[in-house]
Each structure stands twice: as structure tokens, then as C-alpha cells.
Image 1 (cartoon, rainbow, N blue to C red):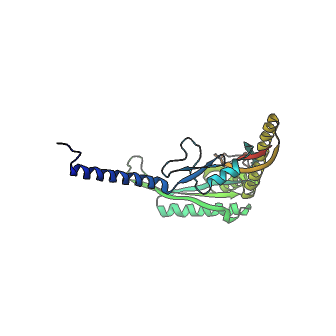
Image 2 (cartoon, rainbow, N blue to C red):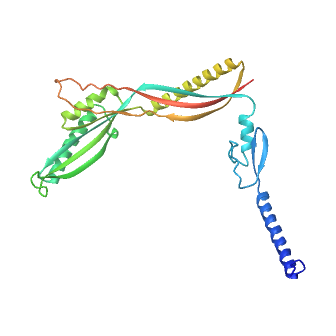
Image 3 (spheres, rainbow, N blue to C red):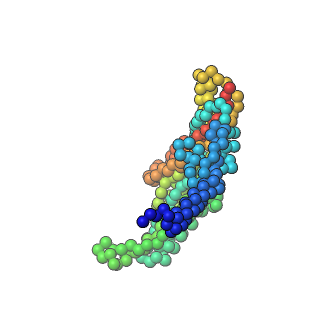
Length: 282
């Protein structure tokens, strides 16, 4: 029996053609509906949506701005360099961590003794020129002391109170420690050295200047070697900023001769900036 003259075969064939044509039209409409544009070398390229423009082309999809950005920033002749700059200074302020630990048979008595000693210490520190606003409590704890023979038995209570003293005059750091110890402090955690806000801003500005000078020096060398002339700065971008890292000195208080002061030696702190600079050339 021949299928060619069969009416059912003819109807099925026509339906298959209609379905195929509809599918092709839908696929075409999907890809043609919303093209995404980008630019390379000043020429706009069209890509159907769904196809990433970054595939081997080295540019991101930015429909409204990519072409303008590339034409403005990367057209013409230019030199792109990285400049690094640092600035250092001695610490101009410090934080002294110290405290009192007391022990008694009851928690209330241990707390009372601790409060008396800490009040005496704070009053003495204020008298040598440290404002009360620069003294703050950083930890306060009360815990039981167990018998070494029977851990279930509490034989006393221990109270620990630690304060942080901000010292804005470096010549007072040693005196703060000595005064606190003479007034009853039996915990000296250490000294942390840092920079005041104004000194931080000063160092950052100097680091920027040094980074720009470094970039200019590199660009000038490249231009001279290639026998071209720098005409202007196209743009400057900060790529990294490394603020100073406060350093801490662990203090172990030792008994010194009467009238002697605890020696404190502050070190240098450094701020580093890295910039990217583009220069136009001709």
C-alpha cells in the first residue's frame, strides 16, 4: 500500500511542517528580541542575549556604559603604571592595659577590696595628667577558687578588673605604669602603640604623594625609552591602602631603684598606598 496518496499521511506531513516552522520562529524571536551590545576598539558588536560577551573578548557586559567607558578611557595612546608610596612616623599615643586582682573568702569581700584598689589607682593616674575620659574598663570577672584536693570545694573567690588607659603624651607612658603599680595594680597586660587621627591623616597624605611620584618616575622612564612624550594624566585610581598596624609591647613590671622610671621606647608605624595612573602620550 502506497503512503503518498494516503490522506492521513498528507495531513500528518502538513502538521509536522507547521510545528517545525513555529519552533524555528520562536527560537529566532527569542535571540533577536534583546541584543546586548559591547564595544572593542571603538566598534559596537551585537550579541544575542544569552551569549556571554566575555568569551575570549576580555570585556564585561555593560550595555549602557561599556562602549563609552572603553572609548573614553582606553582609546588613543597611553602608558599605564602602578606607583607605591609609604610614610612612617613614631607612635604619638599609647594604650596601657593594667588592673587589679583580689581574692577573699567571699565574692562580696573580694569585689569590695578590688573596688577600693581600682579607685585608688584611677585617682592616682588622673593626678599625673590623664583625663578620666581616657580611662575605661575592658574586663571585669568574678570566679571561684577551688581546692586543689577537692575540686567541688570552693575555698575563695577571685575578682579581676582590667582597665585601658589612653596616653596621648608618650613621656607619660612609663609614669602611668609606675603610678598604677605603686597604687596597688598587680596586673600589667602591656602597652599598645598607635597614631592619633591627625597623624594618621598626615601619613596617608604623604603616602599618596610618594605613590604619585613613584608612578610619575616610572612613566617618565618608559616614555623616554620609547621616545614618546607624556601629555596629560588620564586617570588615577587607588588599588590598595594599608593602614598602620598597632604594635603591642608586653610589659613585665620589675622592681627598680627608688625614683627610677619604667623606660618605654616607641617604634615607627607605616602607612602604604598603591595607585594606578594612566598617562596620555604622543
